[in-house]
Image 1 (cartoon, helix red, strand yellow):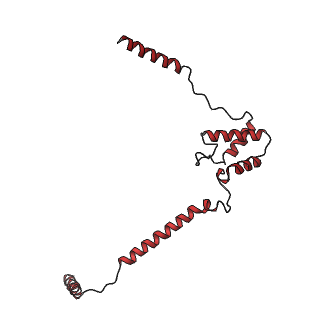
Image 2 (cartoon, helix red, strand yellow):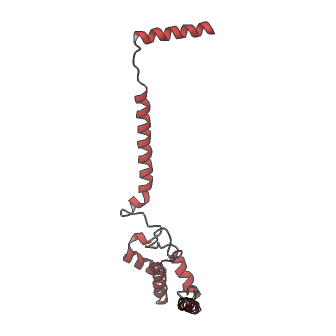
Image 3 (cartoon, rainbow, N blue to C red):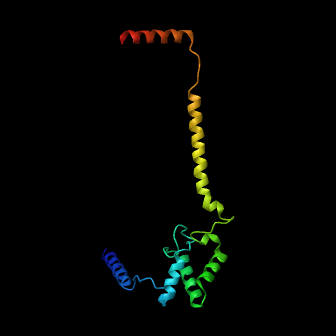
Length: 161
């Protein structure tokens, strides 16, 4: 039994010893030049993270976003302009990499598709509701028994008033 306790104590001591070597570090900046860093962040704010898809690469913590920020910084350090960097990104990843892609024939569905779906859904709802209202109100003539009952009820109501 004492062997088990000493073994367990050794494992606990080893775990504590190993945790002293492990530490979390700060995220290292991808560039040292503050001007290039500011330009990179400005461009990264208009490029979509291809992993997250609902975040810009400036906001994303995905590995691909970090790689893209690093690649943008390297291109800027090589002297490329913002337009050249953007053209490279669009050429490599398509218009989808832009957080706000331009309106053109290949992106028209992306821009106007949601509005068209809402309009079509509203139209379908309106038609279904209208058809339901029209079909529920049908003019059927009363049978003679129903007519006699209605007349009697109306007379009783007039007599009570």
